[in-house]
Image (cartoon, rainbow, N blue to C red; front, top):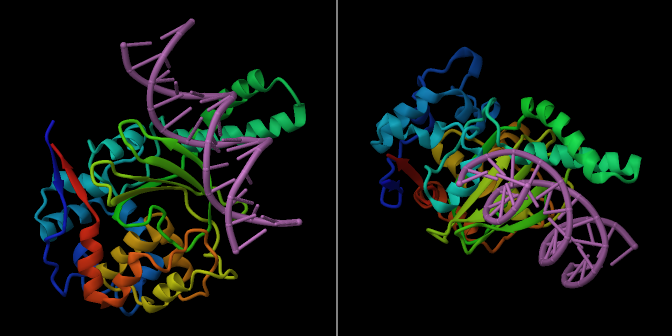
Length: 312
DNA sequence: CGCATTTGACCTGCGC
DNA sequence: GCGCAGGTCAAATGCG
């Protein structure tokens, strides 16, 4: 198979390049979106990904010269690929995707696994023993139920020096596994907020070690933590980009801070909140350099950092 | 001391 | 049925 990697390292982004263009939206705002046009404060990047397949086709054609087929970059159903999602992102055999959620298909193990695990833990706590038989039975029955509630997944490839990109939320690492055919391990994180079962996987592409693949699963049901220290850098970033009008900004957040599902939180709950002590806050990361470069510099720096692959 | 990380064991699904 | 790979658990350990 011949895979073609489409990167944006050398792409010249026009200064007028905006989300409007991306989404092929009318410059005159729909009334429902407020006075200033498209209201990103209520329309997250994730929403975009999930709701406008056609828009991305035209975006890609218009701005990147990609064929509609390459819109798979944005629209590929992660569900069908949840199996491949794990391995192929790493092996580089599937397009990088900023994926839409899916509602069917099996094989999205994490969601059900966690569900089953939690259930199993509960069962064990109550029943004491019989863990194997019990867990299997419970798992079987619960599995079907959980299937229906599969959480959406969003994957991003981001060029970054740090593995775990700061996104404003607190994460606790709960596992790490070696990835087949890759020298780089995959790390598993869970949102530390109670009752928020958002998870994310972070791994480094073995094809390009400078690329970090982040996959979010689920959506946060809470605001970005505000009462913690240590994330002043991220807080400053959010504050500086309060007006998400351009694709530049959005993709910046996406690439460097919110990376997908978390955009929900960033957009819905606002920016500029005080920082918090994320375990992954890294004020010395290259992202700060992006910030210092100004908006257009951000565009040039961040956007090219996201790779898209086209599968033939 | 509390919380986060590490890491080996375990579970599950899938392909052969 | 077996082996493999992905995903999760949880005790041990580290760190501020």
